[in-house]
Amino acid sequence: MKRREFISLIGGAAAPSLLWPLMARAQQPGRTYRLGFFLPVARDAPAMIAFFDELRVHGFVEGQNLGIIPEGFQAGNNQIDDLVPALVKAAPDAIIAGGDVIPRALQNATRTIPIVVITEDMVAAGFAASLARPGGNITGISLMSPDLDGKRQDILIEAVPSARRIAALADSNVATLRHLQALEEAARAHGKELLVVRAAKAEELVTAMNDVSTRGAGALNVLSSPMLFLNRRVIIERAAELRLPSVYQWPEMAEEGGLLGYGPRFVDIFRQRARMVAKILNGAKPADLPVEQPTTFELVINLNTAKAIGHEVPAGLVLRADKVIE
Image 1 (cartoon, rainbow, N blue to C red):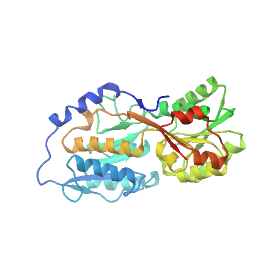
Image 2 (cartoon, one colour):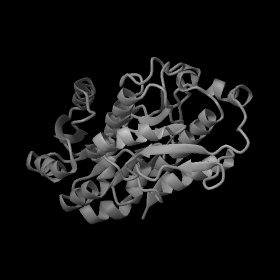
Image 3 (spheres, rainbow, N blue to C red):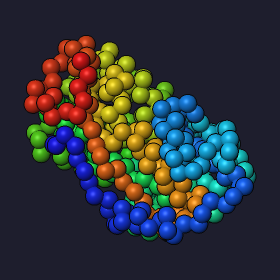
């Protein structure tokens, strides 16, 4: 694993981005553009601050030519029945959402309002016909989660070489059998047994993690999921209580107390999405706006957490980390 990994955008997503400023219509003078949101993050979270800052760079400023529908922040799946119809009725210029469940509900409610999402696999979820040409009213960022969950499992095995049995915490709402079987096969190739535990909602997380410990797993891979990210404090704190070395989807989660975090930065992904939203506000059509993917990945290791749970991270892995907290 290199300190920085750069993965080319698939399906020609990078090259067309150079052409959009020439192809898109200019902003309409005097017009106020409106955005709706259905996201698990708070309005004042660092990722949202970065999102609006990036929009400002591209000429869309809240309170000047940009209006925000206030509902829809720190929102979860249990609000779908109320929030989806309200957003569609408000008819914003674009809706920003994440995950699989919420975008699917929005897609079923409208085929005309542009929806810009961050999800685990845009094509596999059926939101895009292809990365190069989504073909509908949804575009956004595909996180390559199946591949990255596997990479995180490899990092976890290297970080906890003595663990004969490792576990994966999966969100029942998004994890597919094929994805979990691939992780099991990869673990077997390393001579490890993989236990899969599932949770569909926050109330099931502690029970699932207790099950991991009871069944003798020596390490935990917290798989990609908006629900698991939203409830990261519960997971990080329970992992510490169980003294369970764990790896997480975002580098920021190690900065918040997790042992290991690997992937693109959450804040950077929101900036990337803001640039896509700006293209749509300038006239680009979601059907023709290529799905993008992360290009930069970071490994963060929290040695304070390692010390607290009594685990020594191998020196070779520490040396390859992009950031070490100590």
